Amino acid sequence: MKTLPLQPTIPFSKMLDRLGSGIFIRLKKAPFHPVKIRVLDNHFQTTEGEGKLCVISHTYDEYEGLISSMELTFIVTDNRKTATDYENLLIWPVRYEHDNLDLDLISIEIFDDGTYIPVEKYYDSNLEIAAGWLLEFEKKGFI
Image 1 (spheres, rainbow, N blue to C red):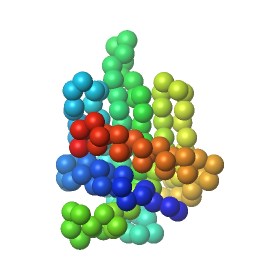
Image 2: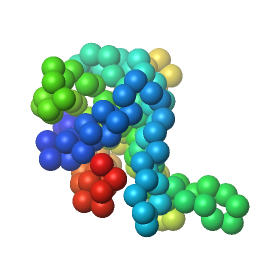
Image 3: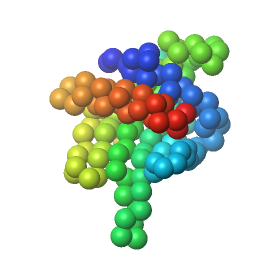
Image 4: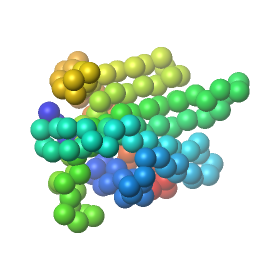
């Protein structure tokens, strides 16, 4: 499976570095709604070694309920030797959800036993969406 290209991997790396060993962080940058990063699984087994299952979401409050306008789930294997060893930070898009557009596009199906397979129909588009989204967060100053 293709991984996230190098250019958007850099802002993702910076987000992970800010998260550290934690499982949740909220990044704020006025006047934008916050970006949240959550770790769903710290011990996700991949063919490249132990990884994480992470979610990055952009949320806002509406009518007394929290709306996730956009949410991306990733499998991340971080084998970096240094903070800037981006080639060894492997990122695969798992799912893209956009509440406002009623989209839920799964690009990697994960089974109960921990195995997973790519869903070709959405994989490339989710990779492009993730790349654009991460670069936009960097441009807006979240990272």
